Length: 288
Image 1 (tube, helix red, strand yellow):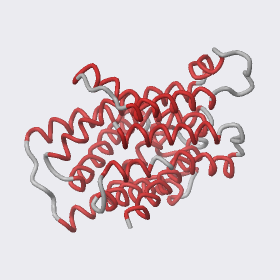
Image 2 (cartoon, helix red, strand yellow; image 1 turned 135 degrees about the vertical axis):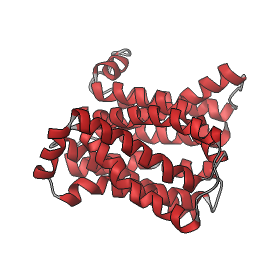
Image 3 (cartoon, helix red, strand yellow; image 1 turned 90 degrees about the horizontal axis):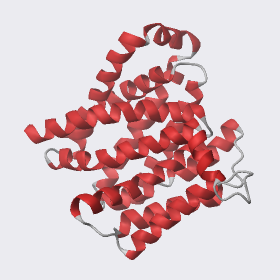
Image 4 (cartoon, one colour; image 1 turned 90 degrees about the vertical axis):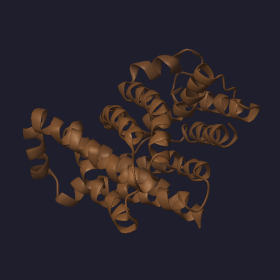
């Protein structure tokens, strides 16, 4: 049963990415980020209202506050990255997140990855390299330059760095509450911060958004994220979180196929590298 919820979470996550990019063609990226968090909030609050909020303590609020600041920045950069380049190029850069986590764990705790996890690192690195190869065959340095010069991949790499740092904050906050309570408080808090940002800096752009697109088109990105998170939370209640999250990473592949359908992205030479990235992530997450 948990496999079904894991796949649902991955599918909704892929739909989120596609619709976020669609919306950035017509409206400001910050407004898209705001609507994403704002419209996801009611959905993630409902389960906590139904089962009850867990008791929280000071450590929870400290972890949540730091995480809110970092994740607000990450969400804004994430949407900008989707806007600036092909999704099949930018989103696979999130495969760097578990690698950065391994590096942080090594320097902070002296944790040495297993041989399988190290193999996963190699697969992710090779996958990202060849995914950015393009027509630059014969020049071994060109993919690295491509990653740097492409604003979308560069921004998504920065998101990966931020999320590698917030991972431990997520874990800490959940340990001092529960997953449903954490999400039910965390997402609306990010929505509140983004609401202030929009009110101060993008008031006219927000008004224009409602004139350019239908209400459903504006809110469904948040609906997809809410459904993805709820599916993830339910699935984690049926198995170990590491298995569910690993399965959710398949959204990278689903997103690539949807990007070909919706935007005509040329993914023929990217599918195998993306597959390597997903397999590498699985090895890192499951065997570290």
